[in-house]
Length: 208
Image (cartoon, rainbow, N blue to C red; front, top):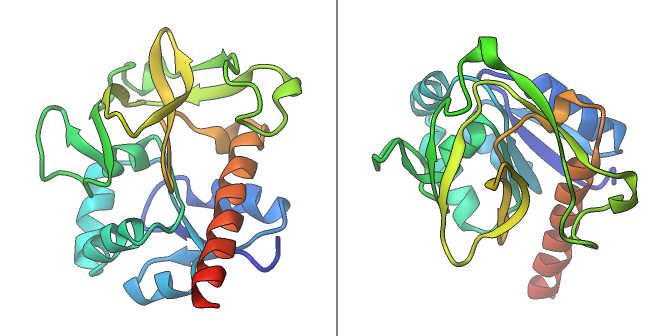
């Protein structure tokens, strides 16, 4: 895993917690604050936080278009909570507020304000899809979480909560409505690192 370099957007939000999990799994991490830092990254994490602040700082740092281009180039991206809002096509019914990479529509804070944060255990309904399926349901912490209200035909739903998709994948994009980095369960980070490794192998074959 040490050969993997994972960028974690470090403008605001829970980026340190993601770094801790990824480094515990053996990956090298880079705190990304500048566009040129993306060149060294085999994968990228968009952490939870405050989307308006993250969007504003990304634009001020010249990162916004670089993030969109990174996702379009098929590098794996893990987005959690606010990161999923940044990936989506429409936010609260509006376009132009996000990177428009994931064919999905979201509603911000749809599970309630921070005072209504909660933890749920999500059953794994797709055997073989996630590593460690035998470990039982996936713990998920929802903090001012977005609700995914529509997904396109290319989007696979991995986990649901009350029939709502809360973990989805579209090719190189893995988007979660919750915070896996706060639970102690690393299955989704391991799943993401598997996407990163597969992407590295694919790119090396193209070069060869």
